[in-house]
Structure formats: structure tokens, C-alpha cells
Image (cartoon, rainbow, N blue to C red; front, side, top):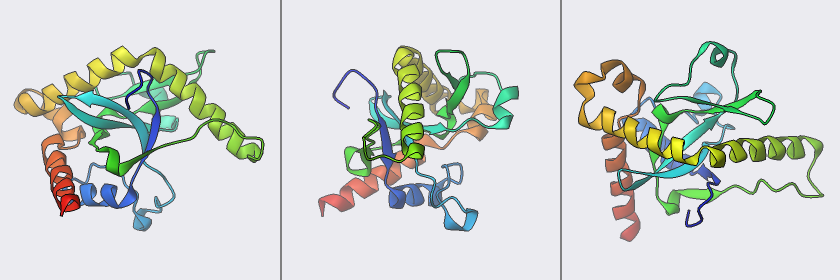
Length: 179
């Protein structure tokens, strides 16, 4: 988080569950929804002076019909193929105590599937770093629209996590960690 380049991080599952208890728009990692093996992976940016993790998602059929918007960005490889997306509407406040950097450097002992996954992540991260300024501006603008003028942005606010409520969960957790 101190370097100028973005990195991918995984977020602690218990923390995700704590957040989802107060806001059902937090991306699920619930076994009841068969999502327990899906890690919460994203990039960390500073939004309103706080660290936020913007989740990465794999390419889905519905994305073909979606346009880039204030709360969603498609990720493309060098050939113009969509290889993922960022869900700004699902970004969550984080602290270094609830995230871990993901090693995406291929290793000689990796399986073929692991190498393919790491290569995909490297391509996605290249796109994120090439578009870092746009990502940070978009995250800050979305945060401001949803927290400062929610009445003017009702549809957008409905799609987004309740950032202020999630910040309270993080603050409570950090206070508990101090005890």
C-alpha cells in the first residue's frame, strides 16, 4: 500500500461476514450461497482519506450488456478482450489488519491452472495500474455521490454498499483489536 503501484489483496473472511451482517450488498462469502471458496480480492485505494478495497470480479455474461459507469469498470487485456471488472459499488473500508497481499508471480511449482490464474491476475493488475488515476477518481466521486447527496442519486445509492455503516464496523473492529 506504500508503493505507487496497485496490488491485489485478499480480505479476511470473518471481516467480510461482519460487514455483510450490517449490509447485504457486501459481496457474499457465505457457505449457504455456495460462495465460501470465493475470496474477496481487490485493489486498495484511498477514498475520502480512508483505505477502501474495490473488489475484482470475473467476466460474466451480463457484463457484455453493461456499460462502464461510476460504479462499474470493465477490465481489458492488451488485445481488447474483457478479462474482468471492478465493482466500485461493492467497495469496502479496510485496514492493513484485515487484508493480505496476493502473490501473483508464477512459480515453477505451480500447476497449469495456477499459472493461468496468475497470468490473468497479472493482466488485470496491469490494466488497473494503467488506469490508476481514473480508478481513484471514480472511487472518490462515487463515495461522495452516495454519502453526501444520496437523495439525488437514489438508484446509485441502492446499488452501493452503505459506506458509512461499513466504516463503523471497521472502527468497532479496530477498537476491539486494541483491547
